Image 1: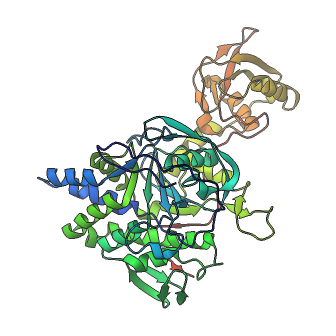
Image 2 (image 1 turned 180 degrees about the vertical axis):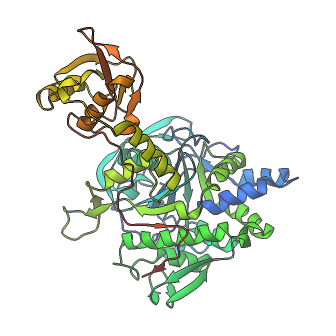
Image 3 (image 1 turned 60 degrees about the vertical axis):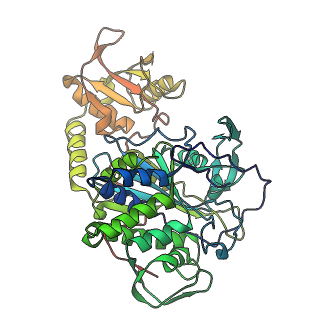
Length: 505
């Protein structure tokens, strides 16, 4: 079902009744999320002197839907930011019913997880294919009377059914993304067809490039090879076209949409937009009317703060990429995709660890220095390593499993099981005294510990009264013998950056 929207200060509207299950059609439509335009406009307008009444007007435009506890509670200025951007295939709005499926409740047709690094030096926009087979978890969802109804989850279904199916709202899409990637969004934004048309018109069009002539009767895009400035209906046709680009499938269209968003970013950053009061006002109006936000992001002040954080980015360090997938091996006629189990976890882990997909020199330098300082140098023999192993959040029995492996497989005979740690840790750590650095380097090599996992500190005393290191297994522990080194370089996947002009082929 469609997201339940409310105006700021108004009670939440009741969700439509639960519908019977129906086959999920492959939608003929797709659109890119034009979140940045509205946010940047909020920043400019909010800063204007004497703009109080107009800001109140924009506040009244904002539509929101409950996050149902699916988010972190909202982005924070001193932490990395994860915003879930959802484009629906809902055909509401003037002129949109003719695109087919006019009665559609609106599914998660275009979904992007935007990760902005803690230091704001870089960002990654991760597209999630609508036809990716996922598990949708149980979703507590706010009802008309304020109570919560748990919508049962499903296994092995298309990602786009996480919204609009069985009464699911955007908070359910957010939970599904967390289930899929291990990354919990701070906030979400939702846009429909009108967002593409109104926001591109507000900035006076965006420039795109075609590597070949395109005449697609399905999307109604008819443009010759070369560069074009598009807006309104033509912009919608551009991001909807599928059969005329690449291999004619959804993944090819995702690439097209990423190119479109890059072009939009460049236009929004240009002086032509930022120095035009008329364009900024139009953006503010269009953005507040076209986007639905979660209940943690429902005022101009909150959107302004988010816009200020996003405004620190340089487009050359904003990378667009897509969740790595392969054709569903269970299908003879290929219609859906499944995770590439080799590459996808690397992408998710890179984002979780705030690793840039662009060459950000300062960040790489810091990481390299930390690793070099702690991991390089002489290593003691395994037989000389003294360590106590604590369980600080790993599965039950992990400390004993690790101890047995260290003693029988790796020759670390001077090791002990110290039981449960006094506190739970997200990541595994190894604390050691300065004179134990050679022992620490040996154990780090055996365990696959990163430099950040090594904590110079002090030693403790083991059962023989001898100084010993402390290894605390955190929630990231995957089993004895499994490397714990987090990636310091993003995996080699297809990607593009927002500062480069690319032509659709």
